[in-house]
Length: 141
Image (cartoon, rainbow, N blue to C red; front, side, top):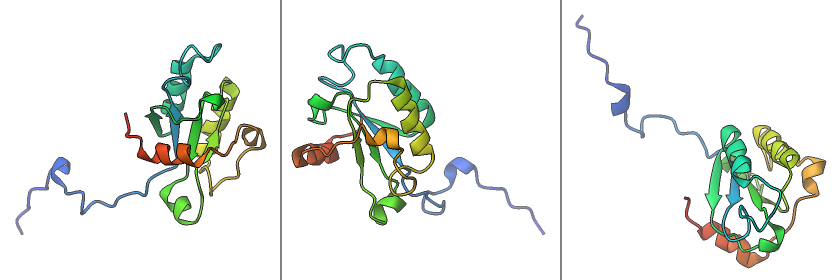
């Protein structure tokens, strides 16, 4: 029986490859207040890099809740979202320990999968509807 050449991996169609549902991810606001010298005593680049080294990160323009700078939104995975989980908005995330707590929570599954750690519950806030709508419309950078 003849041996057929195998198809190169780069030529396989995405339709034939199984796709994973969107994972839990972090949206980091980095615009007019968040991520700028207006919030003093924070290494904003280090915070973003630390998150990106460990969990899926999306950097956003202004999320319109500047009074809570630095703002990080933990979005549930597609599976958790389908089960009713919603994004968790965290404000005043200006401490390296809070960044580490976010990483640990996201690695554990995030909203709808793992309970929000008590320490992070202190950072949660409910954004105004306009801010939630704006966050949905912001393109990825």
